[in-house]
Length: 240
Image (cartoon, rainbow, N blue to C red; front, side, top):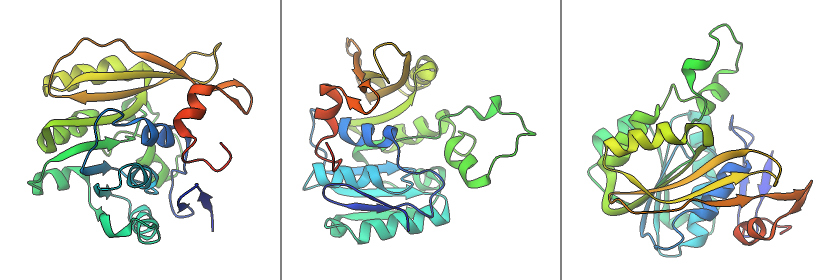
């Protein structure tokens, strides 16, 4: 079995199309820096790694997660059951669209590492393994539907946190503004000083504010990590 070991929990991932990667760990460590949430929703939880990181960070939080893919759902549910915080973690097997149409609750923090390739740009003739395609491409959950669901489920004073490709940030924020969701914090992520910005970590709220994005660089050189990155993830990775 493929198991990824963190300092306080383990994540089995052999049944998930999308394995644990830097994006999810970054988001789990970065989200909600200045506000303590008590009820959290993780959209498209996959292995459940982000939800588990939040359970470690926020000791009093109740955490719910949603996963559409059956294998990933079963694996996330098992990972939750095996964690020391299992009594306050639950996973639903549903699409986010089904979930937000049926649920009346609101959440202090909604978090998502969403499908991030624009399905419209993909060659229909390309051969792509189905579950991986669903996990990586936004056909299953377009940004418009993601943000509409967040608009319906987010508490008036809540936070929505996500990570997306940097080149889609302007488009994403334009859709978010339609739902009165505005950035309260942005971190741009690049691999090294000399590389281009690859990701945008976004925190959105139902209020407009003047913000200045900050920058996070992951590596000085291969496997030599910057102080900022190390400080962000050191509570989770075994060898940090």
